[in-house]
Amino acid sequence: MSKKQYIVIGLGRFGISVAQTLFNLGHDVLALDSNEESVQDIADTVTHAIVADATDEKSLRAIGIRNFDVAIVSIGENIQSSIMATLLLKELGVKYIITKANNAMHAKVLMKIGADRVVFPEKDMGLRVAHDLVSSNILEYIELSADYSIAEFLCPKVWIGKSLVEIDVRSNYGINVIGIRHNEEIDVSPSAYKKLESGSVIIAIGRIEDLNNLETKIK
Ligand code: ADP
Image (cartoon, rainbow, N blue to C red; front, side, top):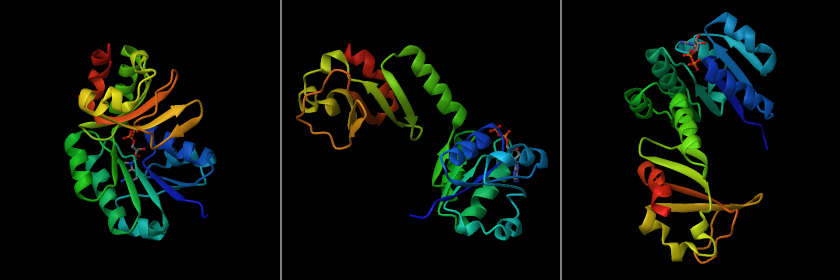
């Protein structure tokens, strides 16, 4: 299997973190920024690092941009550049584009021009930290859109020994269980009739408000 080629554009805090993590996981990562100092700082911890303007079509063509499988655009402050870079990447044939957005309108534009995924790192982290503080049960929280999230939580005590059908999670709580993790094993098509066990982790998708209300409803 060939290795995936990643390009990370914009080396602020988010871009650096994504680039270095992908590299540490064994992937090929090209880090790009228009600021020479930012490029020098990261050069030893990724595959390649180059100085270029991501809104310049010629520069992107020159680095063979269409050969990249995934581009992560992490230009935060300058919304215009973030939009232009995303549009160019799409036009030049990058297969999967993830762009960091600053606000809802920015995100909307990005989706319209072809970003495959839009992330709000500060907002996502804020949500996660807040959930960690108020809830001991929620282990992981991923915001999918303004309305929907995926949450992982410990099987509530009152659910132990019952099946998903008996609990009727969909109509009682408005959520869909998409997986159950027990120790290291994940069951991604959990049987609706299997009894839940103590220590199991439920992975559910649903509206943010339903996931947020879960704990108060279960008690
Ligand atoms: P963070 O909030 O994650 O720290 P910033 O918005 O501060 O992100 O960082 C954005 C980075 O993107 C900066 O390093 C900046 O030099 C870079 N950048 C801005 N515009 C361009 C562009 N047109 N081409 C390449 N890099 C850019």
